[in-house]
Length: 449
Image (tube, rainbow, N blue to C red):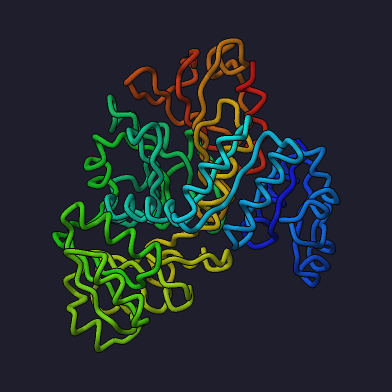
């Protein structure tokens, strides 16, 4: 496809690189001249200097030839203007708009009314709240993604010597889970990612992602060796959009929440907006404050301030002072490797979440959901099998999916199963693929009629 991306921030540049690598013709629009020069040297794509919310600049980016447009600047207003121009002036059929402020929902709805193609909004803050809530539900996980209307979880755990999985071959997991659809679908070992072929043995120190039926999560946690923790309280650092939405979500679940915010106005607004949350004005990196609010009684400490380095420091301090888990918001790709190495249990990256949500729309067709695992080197794709496609032409062994692509689960009606090579996907099945990012574009050949 021809794709125009407006905004060369972390999300825009990562998408441009990924889509270009996938074989799409990408034009990237950026107003900052120095960034344009830098990107032109770094990437083999067309980079246009200018305001992407103006028709002239979009014309220079060949918007009239575009199959899709992605507006991902830091300004909601600029993104919606770019979308309006792409839709009404240039007739682009597939448009993705990144939005931060829920106050723009009405304006976006009006924009959608007159668009005849596909126009969707990507909301990374809401996706971050969803991901954090999933992590809080699965004790001990470093990453959790929900698929198939919540029936199936893909959760990552660091394997310790206490785990019953140590030394187990992936192909032998069916001995432990004869009925339950559970499978090790990706392994990170010594900074290398492995899509297991069944002969891989799980080792101490591995970061292993399991596909787990939600109803049997407790069984997997026991075998992983996650220690029991009777604490349930949550402490949140940061009363911005993410922190406030998360506190509201937890209040609805009757979870005891303490919210720490440095800014006086944000703390006051949070106190007025929340009913059962204790709001404290102060620094999340203040050891005496954390001790005063009894951080050792907290099951999970969640740092979601706008300063990502502060989030890391606060998370480390909270863990040292006795918090059960530290979950921090960090959007710097270079810091992702710190998960599990310095005491941080899980990192939330709105950048990675936004990319997954955008790819769902850009790939379109039978793709229902796309998620990136941590370093953006592994993708999980939920798609629908269609009659006449290569995927339904024979057994999974006969279909010969590319090396590095694994079918982790099938859902047929309400039934979940882990397929073997002798099984086949039928029309209408939901299929969960685990794939390297390099092989992800090849899935289209197996899903199309």
